[in-house]
Length: 374
Image (cartoon, rainbow, N blue to C red; front, side):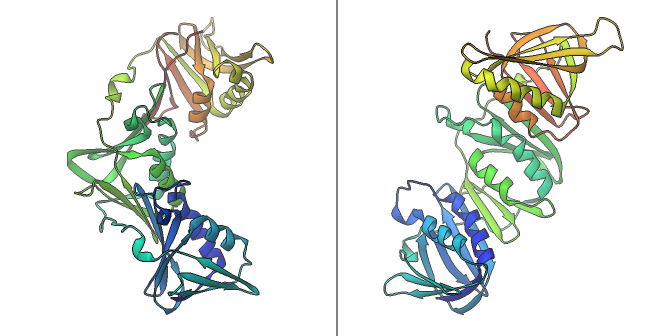
């Protein structure tokens, strides 16, 4: 294999595919990236057997071939090179790649490409989704997925296709994020699946707003594939049944409050500084105005027995009964960071019931947070 490629293109491609490399893989070859020549391009792939990423880079191919190289070593080396042409020449007998970039030369020992597990991507897309829509849907749900493996199904993002509606949802037992969007294709039979949140987050990181993203739905391989320009991301699905989240979302409320998103985020971040010492528990009080047309008050405070406390007040519009409730303040911060609308609506049925946060005048995104005991 003799290949030449621009350093910036190679470095960017490695930064993408190495996200599929685990720090402690079960097989030595899984710590490597696979380099293959394909027509006038260099294909770079990585996998952890659950998530696979392949990317194609424009290159000058003088001699075809393939090899796997240590992902971390190769990526760090390429990132440190000057922005010039990188020449790669493989010595097949020793599985060593000789690299030259300007006056810099290096030799990297690899593993034969035949030892790399095959990456079987689905071949064609079943639907097309605007990159901006897909990325926003993932960013507004995946953060709510569970981190622990106590209930593996909750470490994924639920994906449902029914009619012309695509729904994504994620929950960790303490919060729930649900996002819907209309798509161009129509599905007569409902299809649902659960994709690992890590894989979905990588899709959101890679796709670009201006490009359509193809999605190939599961077949006998029980995997889903996302097609972005020159990139394929494939993920195994999680087995199990996702909880019936629709029944968790309250439909009526005794308190409804409208606040400015950024003002609420800033106050929550200040409260979180002190709430860290108290399991992130912070207090939220809503005091509706005594007279119609007057602004209501929202107080948000965090306390630390050792370091002090912080309380911030917001002007708001509120209807219904006064409210005094405690939440994990981190959960409020997480959802506020993925809402771009100017104002949000917070609704509750009392301190013992879940709170609902959503952008004002939008019904396609809702976030439910369980209260904490005081």
